[in-house]
Length: 316
Image 1 (spheres, rainbow, N blue to C red):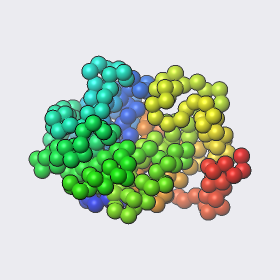
Image 2 (image 1 turned 135 degrees about the vertical axis):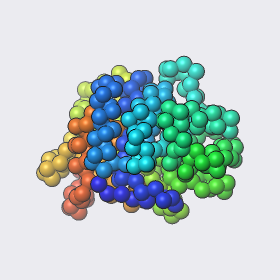
Image 3 (image 1 turned 90 degrees about the vertical axis):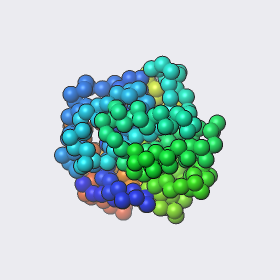
Image 4 (image 1 turned 90 degrees about the horizontal axis):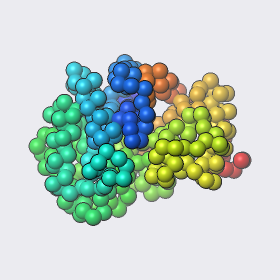
């Protein structure tokens, strides 16, 4: 495994991180059971993954609880990141709301620490911007948490450049967590260059485009879960069909290199300038083992050029 320093922090994180959204289960995903989920966490540790990212909303607390129980005896060996700013009244998607007020965040951190069975997190992130709450108020709460020793560092997720600039006027943020993959490259326009300029670490979520870059879906796939509801990403209509065409071409390159499509997609991502780590979700230890095969090699220049042509639809 390889490691990189996350922004202006002393956190040396594995370039593949453990994304704990999937092990949270319902209402977003299905799992293969608690034992498989826990074993996937332990397998991640065995292959050198030290960065574990979760959030309260992942399984409405279950993801944090499972990570806490599994990693409790390994706490000093791991870097744990969680989030705030998404609340719920009932355990269903319709009740989710963005709330990054000081009162809410101060409540959330204590609830997360209890579930995670720790007295601090290494990175505490705002999950989604709450445009009804001033950034100054949100940052004030985060800085209080940091001063109290409940979070070592502060980060944000899904923020614009303008939001990050304003946040930095109140205190240091060391990371941004955006959606980024071969198929979702919007951050390359302004966000990625800005983060490189001011040394904000990039923690990429959805590096496999929620499974599309595994190559296991085709034009006839109909998503019955959240992916069919236009919540995040593009899994319907013409954009999705374009994605599938691109993945079929990318799969040919992966096969030539003796890699899986997913390994190629992860490798491409972790070699993009400015990227610190890619958060990959898994259901079992076998998937962790497969994902670790994305590390330790580089895509030949000729194939990189072909990939860019495919992504920009110059040859489809």
